[in-house]
Image 1 (cartoon, helix red, strand yellow):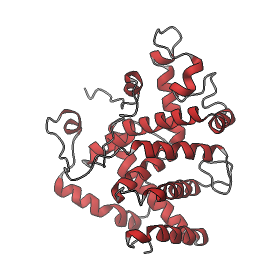
Image 2 (spheres, rainbow, N blue to C red):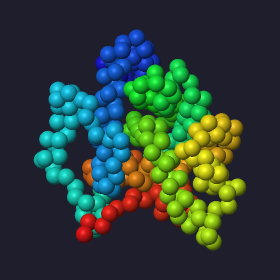
Image 3 (cartoon, rainbow, N blue to C red):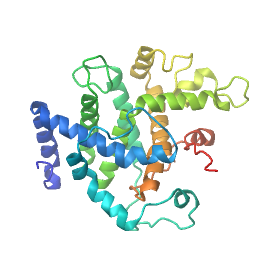
Length: 296
């Protein structure tokens, strides 16, 4: 249990886990499976199901019964005692969530955006030694998951001595990994929402000019999204404003459609909340809201 150490030894513990994972295939596989399962079940799954969204590989169907019991049964028993929050509670409750007055409200989004922007550039290099996407037939998803977690951990090490709490660091790290693991879906969804909205339609007076798409919408014009990955990769590596804008939009969509609804569904909260307050354009923020079907 190298990770159960004093705070001043967290860096050494993280390095020890990384080193062990490099040489212990079983540990590496179990760690990746556990992290992916917890992400799907605790964070992503509730939000997707609340929004009636179905994505490939969104179910935790790769654990044995014993593994499932270790990871989730205690939480399920707790939910049975406390009761689950309903959809009506989420969208119609007049009660305000309890606020921890002692918890400082620090801006966490800029750190997450910095990390995601850096990850985009690393991902665009398509390094086979530490892939952040499926590069070829030899790349396994557990490698991508492991590298995403490792990247987030290493990026956040420099913030451990800057008065950020462990909960704040975990919140930022979860967002980094969450965006990277669902990036293909987020990119497709954002492109689709923009192109089918007044912001992306030529006959609309609100349309964003194509020459401003990269810096304003974080999208590459010319119909290359989801068509030419290489073109997107080159632009991310060469154009800082494009990489920054894309990181902001992907995080915003993740918060609006996955993290935010999931936290409400589970009754949990995170430091600073999940508000998309870094997107100043009202029309863009509206596109990042979950699409709820009429229950009637």
